[in-house]
Image (cartoon, rainbow, N blue to C red):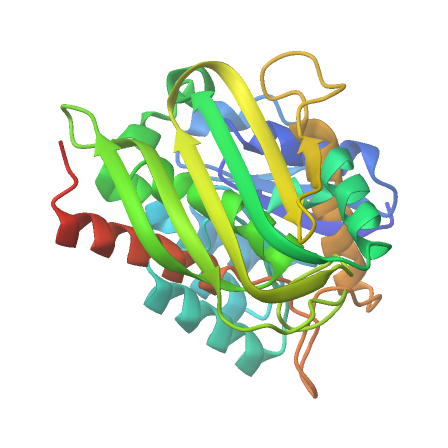
Length: 337
């Protein structure tokens, strides 16, 4: 069998989207799976190597890349081991629990000259790509970007109850959905920094609602392929603002983006349009993730690597800095209630 050989570490709720993408995309194939729960390995046939320890998977060799889709608190150790073994890594967001951990992984990937690709799946959404295309031909500067990310988290997690454990998740909606939402802001308007945060937790201490206010770190133009991580070619004006609203108690699912231009015109993207049913938009988004990641492995570029270094893809460190800033702002304001 030909094609890039992928190993998938972690067979929780998100893994099904990666596994389906590996079946549908040409030039890639599933070669190995790993999960601590041996019962989850049983459905895979003899053509797929099976492991209950990621270190054994890495030691066995025979892989071109690893997909890491385990609980958030395990990202650092598993990604570190894979990078040290010289394997490119595609890791489910967030890259790690803390920005310092993410920076460690990014530095290790640069040192070993292998891709480290954080799976920000919403940037591959059809409606988002159409919005980027609309902005590319837009001469007016962007004034603001608002991202709403609402869902009932219990409908999503299934048996993966670690999502509701702040120690394992890294927090709640801010830690887990915040990076995806921030990546969209960054994609459309460039890097931003936190200005203010309002965070509401439930009785168990999980943050289930948050509103984050952001401001641009500068007035640079965000062109496709630049190291600022933007894919759109729209003009960023000085003073551009961002707003992220997150809700884990929403009855259903709502994911959308609104971009306001300097003249007050608002361009919108409904990320769920045309995808009926809970989480149905993820199927095509994860194909986009693995399609671009495979392209990086083939040397096709598109990931924003620095001069003289490998095309590593978006490493997710900037998103972790915003998440940490939100929790610091919450603590300073005494917003827990």
